[in-house]
Image (cartoon, rainbow, N blue to C red; front, side):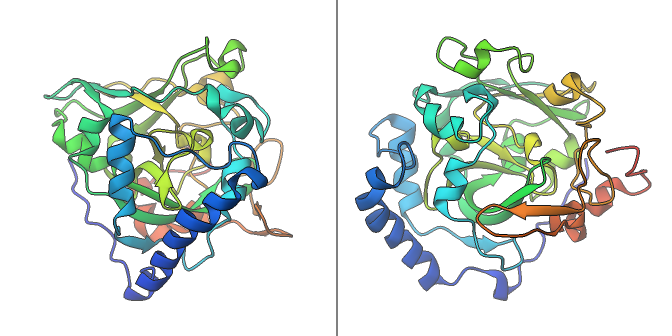
Length: 321
């Protein structure tokens, strides 16, 4: 298996300590005072549950912070948490915020199985206690031609996979989201074949930019953003960054991902951000940044070409979309 080194982060791109600490104070003080007036469900309550309490204490400590969005200003917390796709909670952009309370996140466990030497089902608090958390500011580009800049909190997926020792037959990583139609209104509709599944090649999964996020903007993940743990693959369209993960399976043969199965002409397996390959129903050359007016040019691989283009050397990116 190829080993990757974390891409060097210039000192100029590391969030200054005073900015990080001021944002922390802003979140812990100012936002808490105005939560009810801003929007229902915008903020998420503090908790004493096992995984949440332990995670909150770790997030409250100062974390390493890396700007990997080229100095672009993060999208506001309000825009991040009130404009989402999370079809388990409904197909409208506000549905995840409005119905996020239907997502039951305690207790939560994560199954890791397939081609690994250390398979099993683990309480989320046991998974997290082995991981060093950090803040990473990433661009997020939706296939629908809108984008955000999100300050995630999480850890590299590779760190988790290595702990479970993939076998030499592990070629793909399959992620499965929660399946709870009794509580999740969106899963009572046949929009997709539930539960939601996503798939990465093993080298994509092991790439140091691929993140498992458990928080954003200095807090644990809100339900509408994929609590309690979600994938973030910043050079791919957002639908690849599966939310509310309950299972990670390493396999030899590639299964279909959910959107690929539903409509392969519109949602290819790779889903790499590419301004030169249009969606059948709209151009991908430009994008709308949530919270801003106008449109901006879409960047190849969402601006991460220097880090990830080598993964696709020799591939026809028009055909392998």
